[in-house]
Image 1 (cartoon, helix red, strand yellow):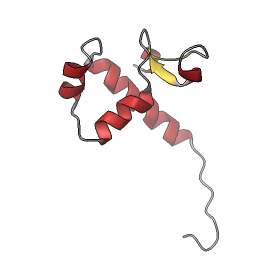
Image 2 (tube, helix red, strand yellow; image 1 turned 90 degrees about the vertical axis):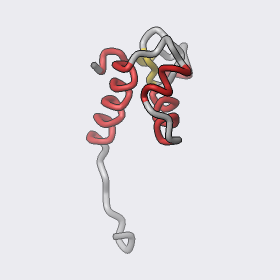
Image 3 (cartoon, rainbow, N blue to C red; image 1 turned 180 degrees about the vertical axis):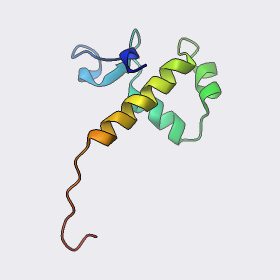
Image 4 (cartoon, rainbow, N blue to C red; image 1 turned 45 degrees about the vertical axis):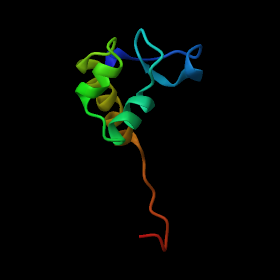
Length: 76
């Protein structure tokens, strides 16, 4: 599913986007976090498919899992 996500330095400065579009993973996450549902997004952006939105979520999840976190003294 993540193969739907591509990085092209010529599009949005290389941000991860849905393949074949100029819609970034970041934008999809912003829409979802603002309260829009998957069906609302598809209605607003009909060239997107449910699988595209799920791929964006999967990509973001993988990136967060790969993130290394280092506790800072006094912040825990």
